[in-house]
Length: 411
Image 1 (cartoon, one colour):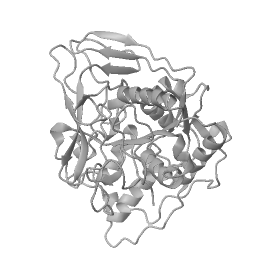
Image 2 (cartoon, rainbow, N blue to C red):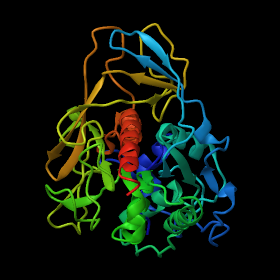
Image 3 (cartoon, helix red, strand yellow):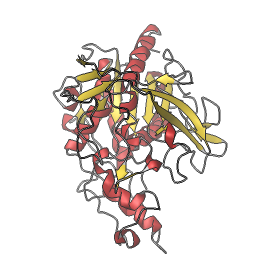
Image 4 (cartoon, rainbow, N blue to C red):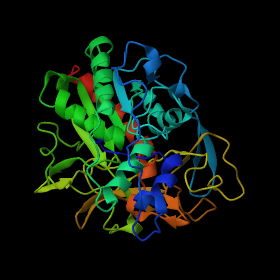
């Protein structure tokens, strides 16, 4: 029905009552879902991606990706310093970003109107990559949260018939946007594909269908696929979902993939109904890929997070990063606070996040857990902040890849 789903922070609570841990009391609606699936959007015709209105972000335009990304760096002792963001005015490569599930529209697929949900998520997950690349981010008719709830509850209802199939508008749009970009804007440049959750799932399918072992693979600098399962043979770097695209193992490597799902180390092993980090049922001998952006070669590494300062789901007020201080910038960068390591835990292969205690007045914890009914939903891990946790690392990686791509003559 849908490709990989992901839920934006602001809209998860409504779905959790229907999709989260079985131990939670389920509302009556879960036992008797609507008899019919949500309707299709008003238009199912192909989008014209020559129309810039169908792009969330476009290079050189004053849009969401040109937003203020100023951050306050917070040292372990609570000292702060303002960090200004400066995009590269002449980047050597491009980035193509596909956002996760953010739409609460009542239809099965969203429309093409840019809403605050889309602008907020691209600011959090991709805008900072303009430090090293031109950023293209298409709007697309994504599978909505409304549809996710319907299909989850319909599937669980006793005696429910299989739901009717739906056209893959979300994938078709991403493919069409990619083909337009490739034909009209790429001009032989290298490109990093970046996605989260539903966006990662769609990009993985795009890679399988349009890039892997095809001429377009020559343009692939890397694929950053956060918060979705990418199957690989256990212990191997290539194979599984992709035929010839290996996992990234160094910052000088190009043509490779980064994939991971983040969890607190203190929450491992995760609950059995965890959504991420396990191979799909059709993956005999496979495991979920885990590539640590903080240490591509493996082992532990220091994460370089950028957290949005505004409240996220389940939190009524801003997180207190330093006692007695208010962070006035849009972002905060807690320096030297987190480490990350890929770990196997039962059937799961996950990126374990550990907090380094601070002796000073800086916070001893991070926001990002999904909270519903006052309870942390541990089966979601740190899905909400997969991108935020490593945004500094990812910016560094894209910069290193750009230099490697250029040194190789764009091959």
